[in-house]
Amino acid sequence: MISRTFFRCLVLLGFLLVMVSSCEKFSGSQTIPAYLSIDSVYLVTNTAQGSNSQHITDAWVTVDNDFLGAFELPAKFPVLKTGKHIVKIYPGIKKNGIAATRISYEYYTPVERTLNFASDSVTRMGNIKTTYLSTTKFTWLEDFENEQVPFTLDTTTGSTAAIVRTMAGSRYTFEGMHSGMVVLDSVHDYFECITHNEFPIPSAAVFLEMNFKLSSSLTVGVFTYGTSTLYQTPVITLSPTNGLWKKIYIDLSNTLNAYAGMTSYRVYLGTLKAAGVKHDTILFDNFKLVTR
Image 1 (cartoon, rainbow, N blue to C red):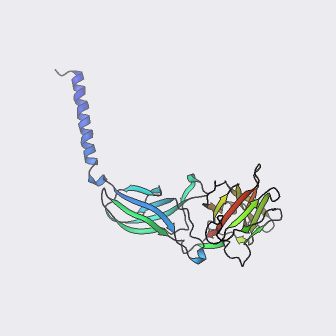
Image 2 (tube, rainbow, N blue to C red):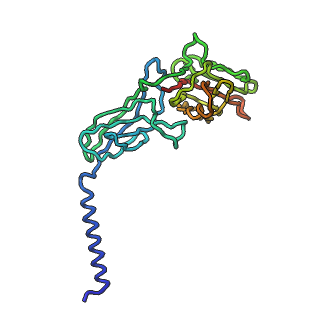
Image 3 (cartoon, rainbow, N blue to C red):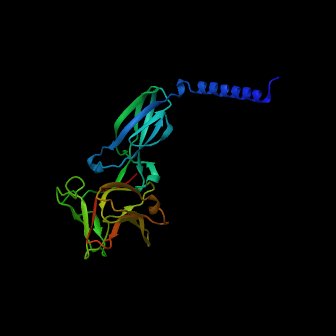
């Protein structure tokens, strides 16, 4: 007679054999992935679009219109496809400079390629080019390059510090000949400026792009205007950059639509000299307001 213990062992062995058999069927060649690698996505602009400076951090990827995922660049990731397929790369950014709010940037053109995938093989896209979508509108551009025209930013009446252009060839300049610079000291300890022009609030999303290098914090916000009302609303406070230039995409959309009846807006920047330091230096360049 077969003992209960021996019988249980037979049952367990049978169960394990079934599981192994099932795994062998599942692990056939159809599940061996191909791989896709992307080194970076760079931006090409024309004169009317301003600088080609960008901070594209991610690739949002679809294969045959099926969303595969969002991948931090450079990236190498599996694709469970073989043969020719249509791949789209949507350039991704950190909205408001925050890693937790990564998005595909709606004003950059998706990159579309037909790629041939093979199992256990890497398809390399390398460094790929994007542009602004042809439908993108540039509401405001300021790169501080043209010495023959005034700045499109005005200091407010309360500001004790002024905007100046960096010297040509200066180590303070981000790119080109000039950047914008503000120096704060014990006498000129408060800075606030506002765009010279007032812009209509569109129904589409509005992003402010800018390059900046800060030794002190800098608040970026908007004035919104209605028929008889005015609101000044901060959107984000940028932190000191530890001697580095950075690029940011600031989403103004929610703030512009926060109050009913507002029809137009201006962008403002403001800061106060940090306590305990002799001076602070604020550098910025390549302002762009983009919308549709």
